[in-house]
Length: 148
Image 1 (cartoon, rainbow, N blue to C red):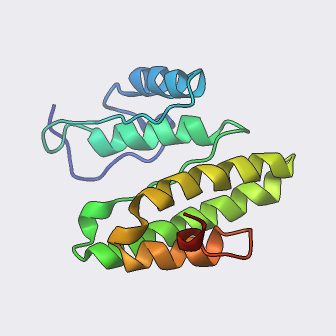
Image 2 (tube, helix red, strand yellow; image 1 turned 120 degrees about the vertical axis):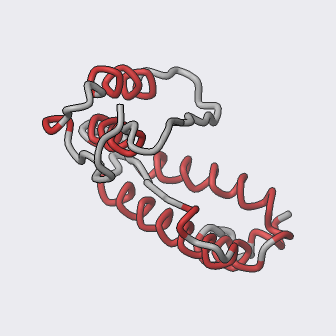
């Protein structure tokens, strides 16, 4: 099914018959019981509706009260340091958005703890990531690098 290169933004505009599948995918993510990380890959030919499907899934996820998404498109950025800078700035904005609506500071602490785990795993490989982690994630008066 080939269509124009304009992705559909809203489920209400679905003319590709992707909305049912998008709702199933979103519900699977929402109802997922494991806290382990996971990846979903959307693959297909040009014009087959990949971006529309992603938009529909995100629409359903963002309609949930306890669910926040961060949509990041790294293939648009060729420099790794710039990509990491943009990603972590976007991540920080998402964390701040979560903290504003957080019912408990425990929720935010859990998010922060999980990001710290990830950051520690790659601190030595990139100065941008180390700088981000040091500035935004340390809460012991030490940098994360020093906490290792």
